[in-house]
Length: 81
Image (cartoon, rainbow, N blue to C red; front, side, top):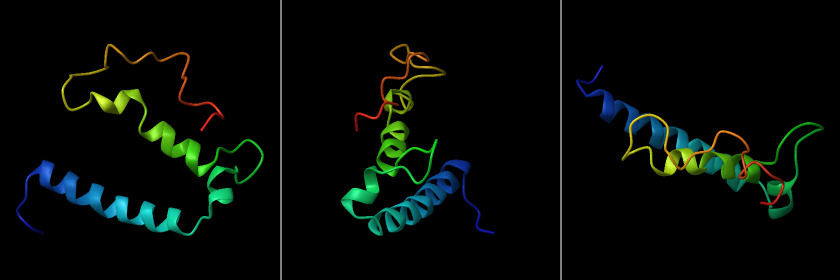
């Protein structure tokens, strides 16, 4: 085990997971990107839109919940990708 800080470990793990996600998304064509896998599922595009939603935009500069973040409704979780 390397002697690294928690932040270094988290960054390394994020880069590893990002590579996996990028490789998985590269296998999808444009049509597959926006189609849900099954009934009640969301598309890969909608999932990505959710992951980059407002909660994460200010995470590095605020503690706890962002004041701009509104738990309900979730406007970025719509079919309008």
